[in-house]
Image 1 (cartoon, helix red, strand yellow):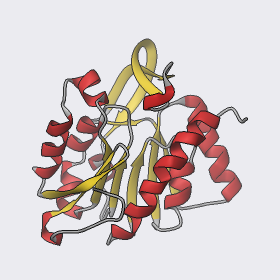
Image 2: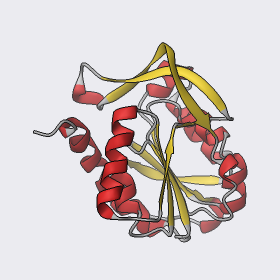
Image 3: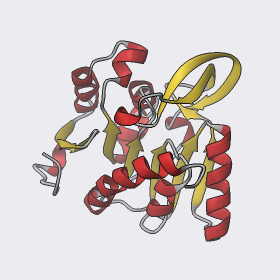
Image 4: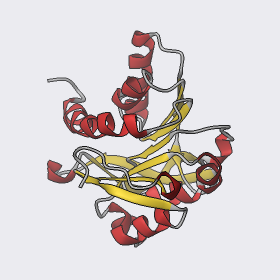
Length: 212
């Protein structure tokens, strides 16, 4: 069993969601994905998007992702050591392994002295973006606020984890996250496992296998 066996187990399950989401994306020029974990998400996305921006704040997992991308000799994955949020800054927090693995692998806790760099999607100033895929343990609402300009300009497919972590960290309910995304002019396609999928309203009704 590898050091990251638990990460691999959960990510591989989520990759089945990603495989259903990618064909829905109409623009394959660039995408934004967080958290990058040990690199399995950007590894999959790099084959479909010209540029993949991936974010991972945890030191060990970021190094594992760097090693994976080096082995793959890929040049279209842009790795960002940090987290996504509403605006640029830093937070004192730490990503820790959950004692109970039934609901996922990691959770975020305050940690004095452990500074994490935070940037916004909008600060990337992407000319185009076909997908925003978020699995950031409860900080999805803040990352989405920091992506509003990009969302309005580029109209990407949006997929994010909705599982109660946002309520634990920010007091934001699952329905409030969905309403936030739909307020950008999006339609909720459905849900598979813990991921909710949204597409621009102007695309009309879309059915995606496995999302109900």
